[in-house]
Image (cartoon, rainbow over all chains, first blue to last red; front, side, top):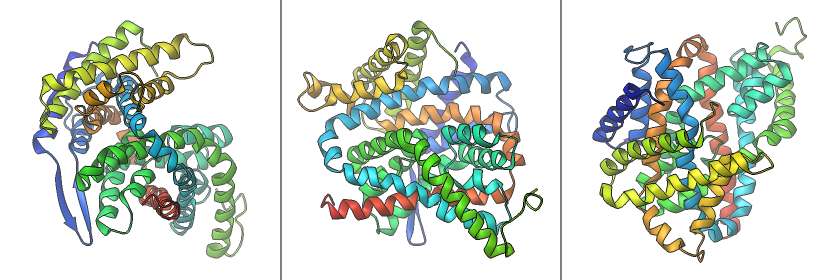
Length: 265
Length: 151
């Protein structure tokens, strides 16, 4: 917290990000919106020892320990976005609750691809969820993080941390450009259980539909909170059993039989 | 997560608030003086929520109190909600996230070594996994919102 250098550096990165400003351009049928928050993220990564070496191990640790508190301000803001629209959110609650089951889309798309790519038991950890902290904890407890399942979930967790926010933000704006989905549906879907991914998605949707910004943010925040509440149970009771089942089926398709323990090594 | 005392928490929140103001002022037409009351309200909500989380029985995390307080204070008809809503409109939620992601970017540096060792297969898979969740939820939300006549 007393790391003045880090805070000044962050202030400079924020200023640079805002000077670049929002950029949007068309790609094929969709549209991609780049937000200052994404530049801030990339600038932050660029300062680290892997790249420009401006920040040191200590700075990275200090920055990490501050994230929990910085998130609080965003959470307070989300509370104040949900409050005024609560009546509307309650009248949309069937959609909000049922879209949570959409998270199982991860299993349906992920498992066949994982097996096709030649992954074995890693599939179970990697494809059962979007691999945020609660899922890592769950897989860690059930299989251990040094198991193949644990390597799978950690791989997706790290990829999600490094480029998940950018990817989800770009995907939301691209899908909006296709014109198939209503902005509210896209906002609800953004609540995958990560506040920064949700904000990146809703933020880029807000550039495309500025007049709906507050309502979309309220839907996104409500859905994200729901994901936080139900995500773990969904993983334990539905996603993990489904992943195991689909993994066996896909192995039969690819290898002709269910893999034995030796083949899975 | 590291535990901070309430005093340290306040200092950090004030600092984060100040950094968010840079982003807020540069990204919107709202002047810095206009946005300060809203930011101070947000900091007050955070402090109250974190304190409740620390001292209330039941071990409910502070973030739950923070969100609930924000919700109650702005609920239509709650005393003073109009004033709070007026000031809240001056603080963009996207500006708040810019600060978080700047710190997150620096902190990700710790994961870069592990990331380099993540195979290309897991990276492709990760993209499809995020797409799966997003598309799955969007399709269901679209259908249900249509069915109940909200869109």
